[in-house]
Length: 277
Image 1 (cartoon, rainbow, N blue to C red):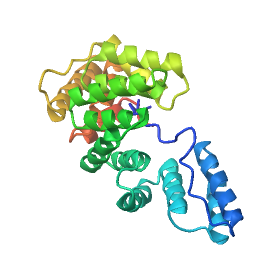
Image 2 (image 1 turned 90 degrees about the vertical axis):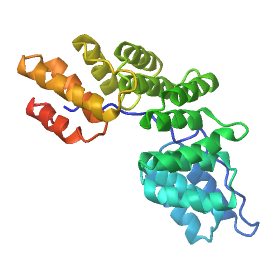
Image 3 (image 1 turned 90 degrees about the horizontal axis):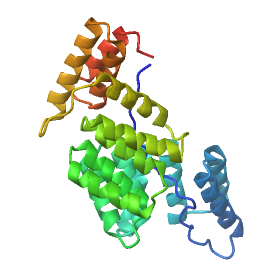
Image 4 (image 1 turned 135 degrees about the horizontal axis):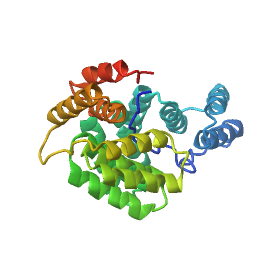
């Protein structure tokens, strides 16, 4: 299989922001909106969608509904409509930390790094910015190769929430992108000690262990994604030719993660090993 190295971006809060109360003559929509928010936070997304439909049919309108629609879209991975809704909400609430954070995460998932960075910078400047905003800000920095910014953001996230596996996972992901294999493995193992069931973590651990065991080349100072992905791909080709399957798989998988022009070539090489899924 392709060993997918992946970020853990926490998007759901323990409890969503409370929707504004509905008018006194329409109690049913208010109850439905509150329950829909709890369903989104708990991951019961189909139930939340049905509840929102009931609330809208009963007359619920405006910002409380739009907030929940945005949160539902984000939780379902429908990032384009989520981002559009968050943008509209931010026009009226430009300093809302939660809207900035979630809009930034939606933009980050869509690969709109400049917009994500702006939104997450604004989110982390608001009073009481939470660990999720800082964790996402670190991911945005990593995707731009801004390692110092990433380290600072993850450190702040870890200070706010030292027991979150998502932060340790992302720190490992950051180290992998830099070719610092042993540090990446230590971070992933720390994440696994907190939450072994975290999505993507098992694959991240597998790749890091393979990289450490195989002795893949480290990233050199100032080396860009293109050059490093090319060297990793070359290392994989050499390893495959000499029968070092584990080393080849680790090299090709890491080259794929760099998302450069080497993506297709490394993916083809990995599939040729029988590693395609």
